[in-house]
Image (spheres, helix red, strand yellow):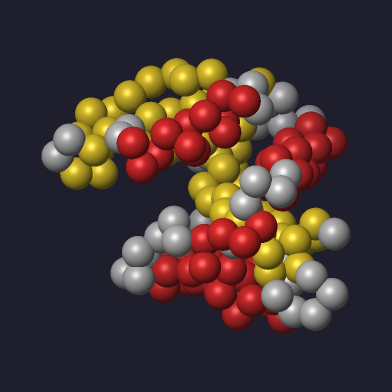
Length: 156
């Protein structure tokens, strides 16, 4: 069952985030800090974490969404990941649908997501297109020279 992450879930969520293989070893502490700040209410911007946690304490999939500053009811899906063994099971879609349902229930207006160009990110771009996101723009050389930021949006 997908549910909101609590402080008791931090280690399980971070283990799942690492197991997804989406972040470098250097990026994981930044994600953990954001998770802890969000759960403690110390984050500069409102946000929420959702996870699918099995019957024990293993997180299978995780997502993090935060409100965009200085925008009217716009949220950014900053992380979504599913353990390799659970990929192609529909869990990523279920996590995304849970985020969208929560935002709609709160009368939010738009969800954006940022990813990158290149073959390594084609699966992510296809996932967002499949779920009704439209590609809105590219920021060239954003992540590194030759690695562009691709921005998608979806009206809720």
